[in-house]
Length: 157
Image (cartoon, rainbow, N blue to C red; front, top):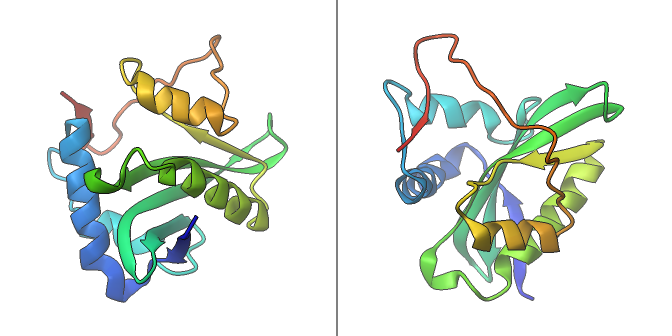
């Protein structure tokens, strides 16, 4: 498959923001006062906070994937959450999502990440099948709970 990941740099900010806006529109995510550029920019390049990669097919980018680093006692060290994965609609259903997840798992391992996590809507069965086929398992005894700390918070409609 001719898919590869390229680390998004400062010069890619506008392209990444285009994908972020499209992803948020698709997922029904709204922000009360979050400035997307100021939240994406710290993840560009070789950031200590995480990574954003452009998903490329040939010389064309067709989406992005972002991970944000954390640390887990349970998993024995650095972990990361797949914060966003977006592929343009016309490139979906062709196996690219599974290929991207395999690539990002390899990249994360090189960054000494011990476990990758992600969120998926309970109603998004297609995405759940993709994630399961890529080795992600549901931890049925757990669910994510969130609290805003600065008055801004992404909400799912």
